[in-house]
Image (tube, rainbow, N blue to C red; front, top):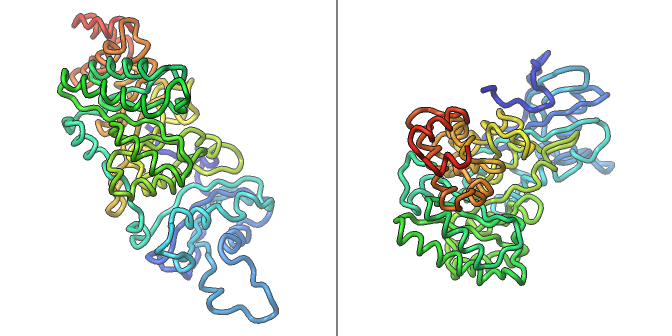
Amino acid sequence: MEKYVPVEIRGREPLRVIEMDSQHDPDDSVLFTYYIKTESDLVETAKKIAEEETTGRWIGNKTPTDTFYSARADVSKIEKYGDGEGVIYVRSPLGNLDMESDLFYQISMLSVGGPILEFVYYENVAYLDFQLPEKALEKFPGPKFGAKGTREIIGLDENMPVMGTIIKPCCGLTPEESAEKCYQAALGGAVLIKDDEKMMNPKYCPFEKKVRLVSEALRKAEDKTGKKVIYAPHLTARPDKIKDMAKRAIEYGATGVMFNAILANNLGTVEILAEDPDINVPIYVHSGGRSALSTGPRRIDDVVTAKLTRLCGGDYFQIGVMGQLNVHVASRDPGLLLRLDEVFKEPLGNIKDTLPVTAGGLGAANLGVNIQAFGPDVAPLAGSNILDHPMDPKSGSVAMYQALEAYTKDGITKPDELKKFADARGYKELQAIM
């Protein structure tokens, strides 16, 4: 599988690498990586970006101060891909930040909260990545659970993926209907279940009743299967109310929480929950809307969003589905999916891992290729492919485990081979959907 390369420079090699002397110590600065394309001089444009994202030009008649110069970001390296086109590496000093305040907010403002996505002296710009020194990393909470902690909650073997489902239809269900679907899926082995993001806790499916009934149904399923299930209902509160809603969800029986942290809320809200000792359940960070940020001529790469999600404390984050090209934008880029998986698992100070969720067209037919790509530390969530099984949702979950067996025992990743496997073993649940 190809290594991820941002779309702007994919299939290309830099014509020249320009090393520049930065005044800033890597241990005391943030390294931001951007792609830019401009009709002006590339080096001068890069310097201007570094200046504008920190101090701006000196204002006034007096001579600039030493503090001003030390506060100004600078460029440490440029990879030139063409006239006015390249990847630039900007070092920005931590001295500009209040290290005891909200670093997520400050780093977001420092990276793209200023003019870089707004100015017109370049045609294209992409915020590709960032690197924090240890003294900044230690200020972030990171996930409370990650893969290991999730398995401990469930009682799951370390080599087993965290299989589950998403409640469907997206809306239009009563609490009783939601609970029954969850119960059936759990009987078949689902261990992670979340609300669909379109479930907004309306009058016909109020939050408290839904969470209580689903949680009760999952406890009944556990009595029969011996498997605990993490259930993450959708928190639809604004940031100043979300802690209260999360605590009520836990009181009602929820064993996880879920909300959108891209458009409807923000990743600072994830920190609010992750840092609260009374909210001791996994946080599912819903990623809806991220492609609006990560595509186009002025964009923020998914790598940045994923890294911030992990730093701020997201236990689960949907990356996309390997081998699924007609659902989500990110799924069309296998290299990106692998890079996001890497971002969630690579060493990052004392920050725990985030469990990548593969969902959005996932089912038994493509489960194997996703386990092959991401390994067992992944949460495969099949919504419609479990709940719309022609027999029942229980059979949908069972079919997923049969497909997992086909991969783990025989390395099967192709649908035609999976069908032969199901036929040979008489797995009627898997046969019904192949």
